[in-house]
Length: 114
Image (cartoon, rainbow, N blue to C red):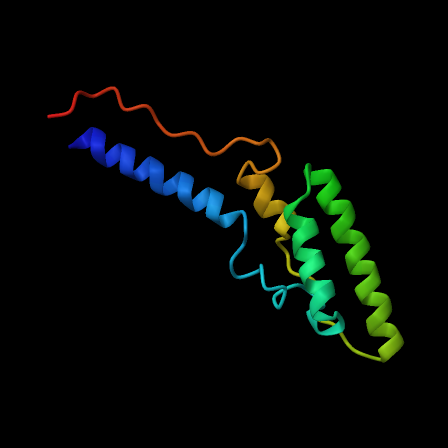
């Protein structure tokens, strides 16, 4: 039973990690910082590009370029922007091991099943 529970917990963690890659709350693009200054197509392209990044550095560079563009749009339109969020999608993907290509490791349960 203990081995089964450990396996189920491990599988749930792996499923959550791979599902989280898509950022369901983020994937629509509506939750992107500055989304109101972007077209729906731009929001979709932004999410697609972020999800396709291969390294944290690449992701942060793209994110900073995006933020500069949004700041310029806001200034041109006379719109006040809230500060960007403290946590970026790049940080989240990095913590998940997304850039290393590794899923979170499961603990090895060496106890025999009852």
